[in-house]
Length: 335
Image 1 (tube, one colour):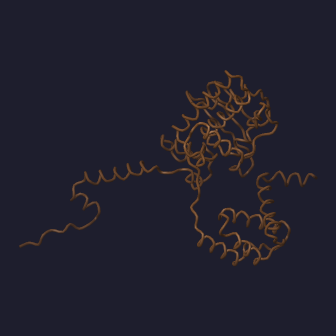
Image 2 (cartoon, rainbow, N blue to C red):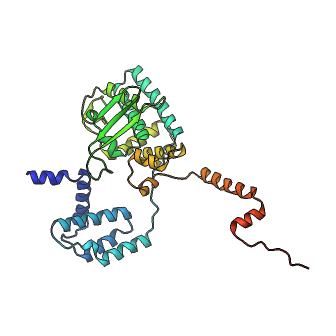
C-alpha cells in the first residue's frame, strides 16, 4: 500500500469499510446484480428485499452503492426519482417500530454485581482461574459500560496505555476514534470512583488479575484461562451480556443488548436531576435527536405528571379557571 492509499484508508473507520463491502457483496453475489447499476436494477433490488430487510438496512445498502458509483466515476442510480419512490412505498407498506434494547435499571445492575462478586469469590476459593478471569472481566465491562454510557465499539476499543487511573478518585481514558468523533480528533472520557458499584475498582481488579500491561483492555478468555492477544469484537458483547444475565437469573435476558448499558445510564441520570445538556456532554451525543432515542418516559412518571396537572386544576376556583382560559362566563339573563 502506497502512502496515498494508506491515508485514504486511515480516513475511514474500519467498520464502515467492512459494512460497505458486505453490502456490495450482497448486491453483486447474493442478488446477482451488476455494477455499475441502473436505477431500474436498484429499484428491483429494493423491491425484492423490502419486506425482509429493515429500512435502516436498505438505506445502508443504498449508501454503499452510492459510494461505489461516486468513487468510480459513474452516475449515482440511488438518487433517481424511481428509487426514492420505491423506498417511500416500502416505508408505507411495511411500517416497523424501531426495536430498542431494554435499559438496565439500577436494581438489575445491583443484582448482577452481587452475583458477579459471589461468583468471583467462589472461583477464587476453588482455584478456577478461567472463571475468575471471565467474571472479573465481565464485571468491569458491566460497570464501566454503564457508568460511562459507552457504546459497544467504545468499550472494545479501549486500550490499557490510554487509561489513567487515580485510585479512589477516578479514571481518564482516551479513544483515538469513536463513532461520534467525526473530525477524528480523539475524545477523552472521565469516570469517577464510587462508594459502590465502582467501575474504577473493577477496572483495577481486572488489570491486576489479567496481568495485562498494554493493548486492548477487554479480550477473550478461553476454557484454560488463556487471554487472547487481540480485543473482543463489538458484536460479541451482546451474547456475552445475555449469557451473563442468564447465569445470574435475570428475567428475559434476550431483551438486553450492549445498548442496554447506555440506555440504562441515560435513564438513571435523567431521573436523578441531570439536565439534557450535561448528559449529552458526558455521554458524547452531538444532537438532541440522538439523545432522545435513549430516553424513555416511565409510565409511572407520566401518571404522576398528569395527576399533578389535575390536582393543580382542581385547586383553582372555577371563576379563576374561566378567566385564565380567556372564556366568557355566561350569566343568567336579567328578569
